[in-house]
Image (cartoon, rainbow, N blue to C red; front, side, top):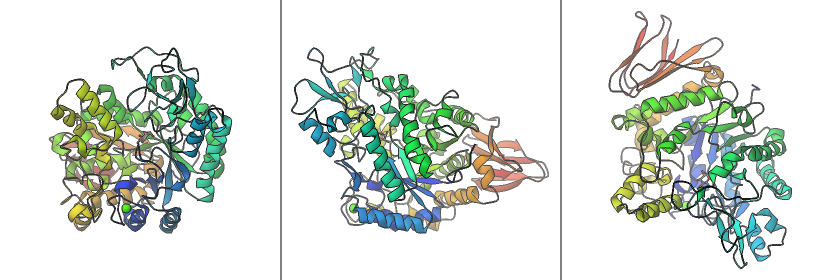
Length: 559
Ligand code: GLC
Ligand code: CA
């Protein structure tokens, strides 16, 4: 594998509306991010992915872009962006913008022109189709519910396609002119604005069949079929476009990209990452995918630690030495990782540290989501009005349509909602958690009095200080090579609740153990072994060549 500048990096995701508000309107903003750059530097972050900050009507919280080259006033101005870039540069932090080009907003100039004149150049940037026998063109279901087809305003029997919200019209990737416009825009950010790269949103959705045939209805019962089915049949279509994108943007400018891609297997992994891959990295969503397999909107089954271990390890083996995954436990589309993946007894600071050990020592480019470094748990939502996300609202309506009670619907959302990753960051124990001087746009997490940056900074034993230590260890020049390139080798699980593995480099081997069970586990080490870092209670006995890792504890050992 060719060596790349991003290989040894640690990344952090900011959900800007909920990171830090500086002008007292209840929404996070760019000056808020600027203010916290030293905090991120202190944490050890190299790359900063910022969820969309472009001009947007926020139908899908900024993933509906009205202008790709402007900043939404809620966040600040282009000048603020330049200041942010300069501040990040000072600390050697690279900015990663969110690239949302499967769709834009219905308030984008292109779409307005397209609707006004379906024969215009702009109309060819979208997917317009005529209805059939008074019905929409086919029976695909959008990701946020309902048909993917919506009437083109002001036109007779003409529909536009939207994989997500109806305010997110899909772009027509089959049009080479549109593709060139997208590459030009990307290069403006990459080269002129000097960002480090892009996180590439929902991109496999561009793998479409332009004839839009009918599909067999799936089990949901509305006569529709999930639009993802078409994508899974047309991965090659998407890959061809992505190869072209890569050749016009990331590769010539040596920039980083991380793709939002699901469904990776041994057969296709090399198409996505590594020397022949279209991305610098892709997120490891294996645990999320395993959850989704069990998932239907009225039932949600958690994974056991054993299942979590199996899928996480399988993903490591799939990527192997082909390329780099980006390990994640949560993001702005997910509930909190500690609440989702750990048994109830470890949904606390002790569990959060041990899970952090895993997130930061697997092979790949780890992404930490804002608040994860504090051990933030899910937020308790008591009323549907406390949730904001369009997908949560759709799920709630679905529950109602199927005759479930409000209590059951809220239970489902408290387990699953994307809103968990969208509540304000807890900075201190003052009112509004130090996020804002006014009541924020989303509820504050109930644990903010203790789980916040200020209290945790002062506590040597906090999750935050532990994250700092693991990141520092990972980046220590003595071990960086092993953590970056060392082979991943799975070790046996003695109690069905332990993730244990080796990271084997050329001249050193590091052992990682994270025990989420109810009793201690013991592993063999050797006489020269040293404990590099631990959380909870760990006893290393070099005389007897054993390490004992107590329940809820983790250890990183140089063998
Ligand atoms: C991605 C984003 C999600 C968004 C969707 C549509 O999955 O992470 O937040 O709703 O794409 O852009
Ligand atoms: Ca603000």
